[in-house]
Length: 76
Image (cartoon, rainbow, N blue to C red; front, side):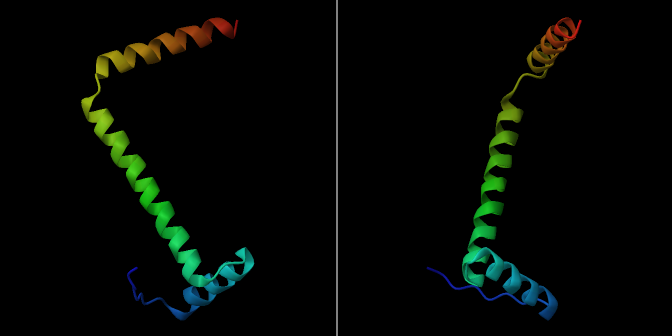
């Protein structure tokens, strides 16, 4: 396991300690949770962008048009 030192303004540090206490976790665990969340979001965005790059724009727009027509008919 690696150790990382970060510098934060005192006010942010205090607010994070309060948040960790409210959640019932250590400040270290809170930061680990934040890191996991941002890495997961980044991985999801990367997968989306890779799939979008391989996608067919015309086919995608055709599917959206089909959905628009379907929902326009069901609203009547």
